[in-house]
Length: 550
Image 1 (cartoon, rainbow, N blue to C red):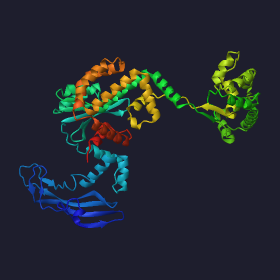
Image 2 (image 1 turned 120 degrees about the vertical axis):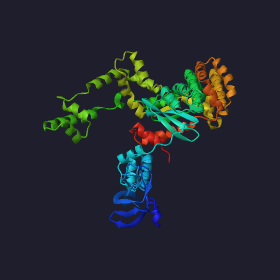
Image 3 (image 1 turned 90 degrees about the vertical axis):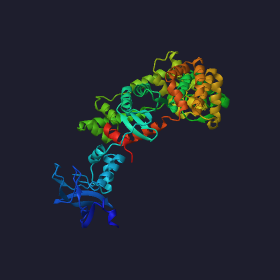
């Protein structure tokens, strides 16, 4: 191995010898230049005053710690007018003044810190043989030189969440260089306007449709062209269509019913407790034959009552022995609330209330069995019917009364009721290409359009707007705005009102090549860095890592 591959700067220092220890190596090196320049006046001098020793850490070799024992010198300044008479020899390519680590070791730590942060960076550094603490890495990030800030010609603006729903900041992107240029602590119009005034020269500003950024750009750079993001325009028109569908939910339900009716009905036997509507006489006869004619099918609670009585006796016996509720619970393996109730009861708590309730339902047993056989398996409906006949109990009692029937009787039911799509789901069905829709989804969208001419007209306007955005046909925007304003659909009329307030930026978005997609990608990178820091980073530290580029 050549010596030049081992030393930071072979032209500035030369290796004398190596001292080996158990877990480290010490390189004894000395300055190699004959003269040195005064750091104050820059005058070169060859007059040596004395020598001194510096010990600094260097990059490890295969995980082995390396230390430099640097023998360097002090010189006399030969410039008579210089105030510094004696100066120390500087070796900036090897180690900075007063530093305890070489320049290349500091650079490596900075890279690790910028990539991983404090805790994760320190763990990786220790595995690589670089002994460093998390706080040191964070300090290196803060001390690192900030990247040179040049005013971008095309500026992207977007917000990011410091704490979602509570605090937000602003990220500024240079579209031409594909890199962030600054982070602002909030998303107020005044903050953006002040930054633009401090950095004149921005010609194009891409943004979303937020009013704060529009005002800030107008105040800070009145001559700049504002460009509305095309993705946000497509998102806005989808939301308009969703609001239209939300106003016509009945149409969605009717269309789903029509499609379901066209598919036909299928009767499937299962054993479940779902409510059904069965009209097959054979099925009713089968159910009537297996339904209980007495209350024997109701879940018998006598055994449960005997077990609970035995638990009460055990609890009271352990209580007399001095055990606590928690100790008894652990010993008998029952829930704390159950033991606590039995622990504090002077007498065994009888279950008389439930038995009386069952007796209240008994006179209506024949009627309930007949209605169950007819296909009425909804306990609430049965409760309402017998309540009109004089029943004075609760609906809970009726649910318990028929519980055994649900578990033991094979129930015949039809296919489930049609699933009505939500307005948002319906929007996505309309947005999908027809080739990617199933036959049922195609029938559903066609049925919706047939049942409601308003929805059909709204979808046609959405399609036209999306075509204008995709093809950047800004010349067609005026006619579309006029048609939407006269459509009679309040959702589109409100959208046009807001669109006219920002019409210049929208038209620029439909004609300019720039958009805010790159800014959204940089926001995603910012979120990754913030979450990597567990959301606890100060603004200055987050800003340093976001603006850093390798």
